[in-house]
Length: 452
Image (cartoon, rainbow, N blue to C red; front, side, top):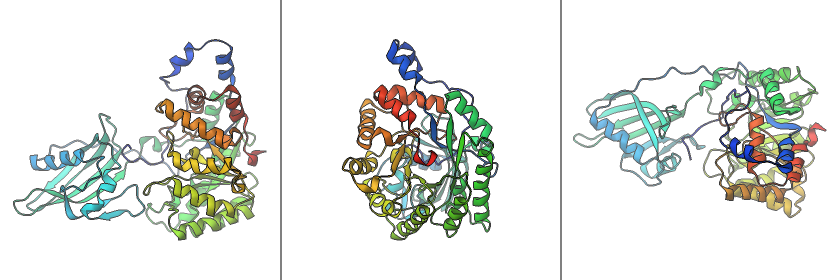
């Protein structure tokens, strides 16, 4: 796993970026290659815009500082234990560490720390930008990088202390995702239309990012709901410029006390076809009964208002997999039996595929004829990259065939740093997934029921 990253935006809109596998496609000749290359999706079922209200200004670069040898030794030892899952004496017995990927922000005690350490790659580097050293207390602050990459991915702060004459140990560790510079520029409807035109795609479903303002990790705001409404309205207004090509979905954190009010408000807008939910951003934990009950209320209300749901189910707390899919299947789908439910990223998060055990629950239920899956759909957004092994690609195809290609929708998630433009993503799917030409054509021609 790489250094923890969050959802953010990237305007890769001007044509097709360099594709390292393009040379392989150029070697293909004959009728089969020509037919496959002519297959183009009718609809991109997973798109985003980025409003001026959601952009973040880039941070100025920080200068690296040279640490005193005893503090540099602490930082090098911290790097060595990244990716491990063993308690380390580098931390004090009562140390606290911020778990960026967990539901409970702070973990206490040396035994709990490996849970966070294991989320980092072994080649994580800590680059110091500031420090203080006293007799028994000190700190190191800086940025986190992966391998030889020059890009800062996180900020960190290590609070240090030591007994007189003893070694320095970490008493508290704080790390937070850095704003990505590409969030500094809005992604408007004109840029999206250009990207669709480059790919030859006729229409797109545009999912609002209003749920960002309901993220529990954001600073409390008295006008939070006003910001959610404004973001949903901005998405609707933007897409209204191309009503024949763009279909808006509103979004909201479904656990907020205003969630049902916003669902009802959006249901009265004739252009809006449904709601987007992001479990990870909204800090939803399906192992918490109160979260499940809140979701059931939202799903029932969505069903009553005939508002389909696009759900990003992966969440960053703990281990995500089979048990969470079973909860979704057993407790949430029955609350919305009459509306399409589109599961994003083949039940993962992208880029890439997985965890397979999460998707397997739905694939097995569909293959068994489970009536709860009657209206279940899946999008391929950012699932296929250049990194999957042949075995992983074969597993993706196995699950797609279990689910049924008629339930698989194309999506590209334009606006994330790991998501190339639609033209490149579809090319990667077409080349790398060992699907038949007929299966590819079916997926490309699939149109979600909420668009018919």
